Length: 261
Length: 106
Image (cartoon, rainbow over all chains, first blue to last red; front, side, top):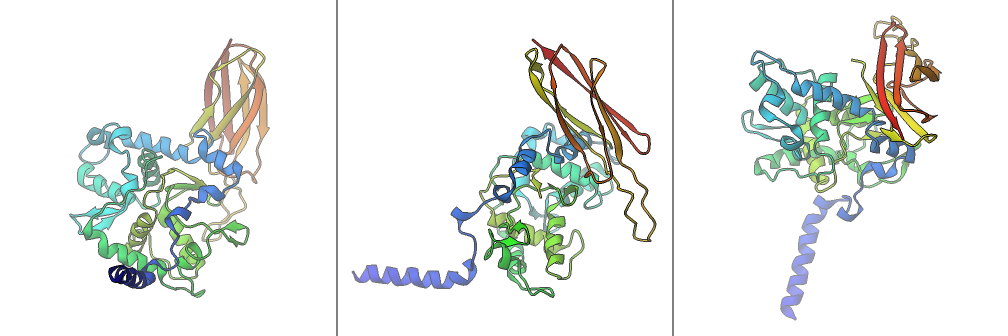
């Protein structure tokens, strides 16, 4: 009886300590992809590879994967072979820690590191058609795989920084990411359903953009929407936030390349 | 880099109505936008799309600036005989993109 009460007190204490960390976070059972909130037409577009415009980028990516580049005159395929095997699940594990530079890199960052190190080619401009095509092609190989961020202790401080960014009020509207995507998901912002903000389908084809775009581009949309200062492409803030979002979406199914309104 | 995705059923029964889906990569620049220095960006859209079935025209579309980038056009036809469907997109710069698909009618 006494032990039971003590255990109860301990559990209550643990919950009390955890409470600020958990905040209004989305309960695991309630997590869902923004796919669920899309119109039947947009869902059909994503589900059919001949209707999904992002597949045009995937086709480009396939061509780039097999094309020799740089002073090393090597293609991605020369080392990695068939991406259906070698790249399966890779996009579901990024961002990951890069030991050479001592910091995490996202998928686009990794592709550029591989280009400069092994192909001896200049890095592709972030958000360029070529880089989006390659990342779409690589991410396509993870479709259906669960999001599985690496359990790497070296990532911990960067994830914490990402979580801090996510929860911090900023900008002229004094909003944080969490205020919408944890506390008010499912409600409407103008005509749109507020999503939970899980990065399950990047790079995405966004109908509003009429093009393919990366997760960083999407994050920039939200940050400028809060009227906060928007970091440049490739800034560490994005990679940290991507790390945190992947942790938050752990176990959800990859849809890349997804279609979003 | 204009590229296309074409989806035609490989096989169909004679007389069956089949759905044809086409997607092409194109910027569909409206001509109404200006660049950062205020200069008008010239219009560059796909202005016509034609589909022929064994040489006979079965579908034609005129496109206008209000159509989004990467036009997705779907339509139906009756599978009459085994043969080839040919697709042709023409844009304002005179670039012509073509594609073909085979269909077997049983």
